[in-house]
Image 1 (cartoon, rainbow, N blue to C red):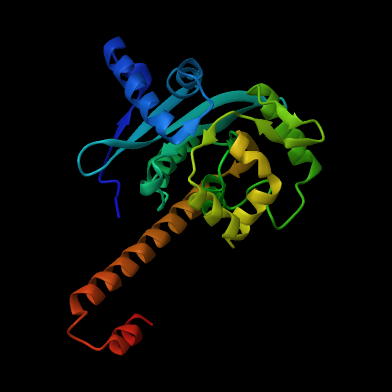
Image 2 (image 1 turned 180 degrees about the horizontal axis):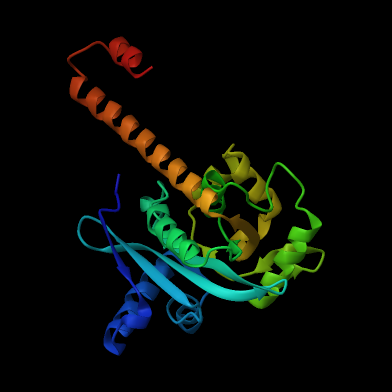
Length: 274
């Protein structure tokens, strides 16, 4: 199975004009293999020339050094409810054969932690408008709290805050009766097999996303708010580390089984893995 072999972090504001143009061209070329519905000008505005106070872009490459994915994350400073707050936003894309493992967490968690340590007491939120169940499911896996979710009704004051944030970022609802589904326009290029996989998926977060945002294939985004705290970021880091250890353990068992296959009866291998 293909895998992400290396990464490179860039900060667009530090690049020369020539280097920035090279980044724009290579990233948009990759983006068009992952998404439909976004022209180059809009892509540059959101991803590379964001008006955020802080922007980082993690570039993912395969073992041949080819660009296979990206994760752009931004920290904005906005007055929300009369209080200066930090707002984390991001755009990400990965070729389908390289998805899985949530490798972006190890890049964003330290920077979020450092920002919060530098601004003690400042409210901080992650605001997303997810256009694919995989992204929503990954955030739900690691965050302490995420709105909306499958387990509870979103409180009215949270909905009001989400509306205020949506307006601040010019996110328009698809339908005024449902303010949590907004017009994004980024359409993930999924194969029929990919879409069938998500229709069958039994993960509660994925099932909730599919029910709450059935128009995601048309570029509709599920507006999602995650309140962030230092304790929550530390717990998210612990969950990520635990998931990574579990994957390593499963991979080690699989490799051991492959090396023993043909030397031991299959029944022994089954018992060893249990």
